[in-house]
Image (cartoon, rainbow, N blue to C red):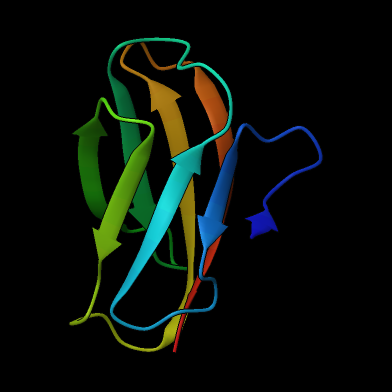
Length: 88
C-alpha cells in the first residue's frame, strides 16, 4: 500500500499499475459524496467522478503509460487529498 502524503486520508494500490487501481479512504468519510478528478501533466482533466464508498476502483486500461495527478475533494470543493498515479 502506498501512502500519498504524510497526512493523506487515502491510499492507492497498486501504484504503479496497468488496467485498474483502487483508491481507499482511510478512516471515516468526511462527507457522504466525494469527488475524484484525474489530470494529465498538462493540466487537462481526464476524469471527474463522484463516489460514496470507502473504496473506488479506477479502470484506465485505455490510458497511455504516463504519470497522472489526482485530487479528491468533498462535493463542496474542499480538497481532502491529492497524489500521483503511475500507469504502465
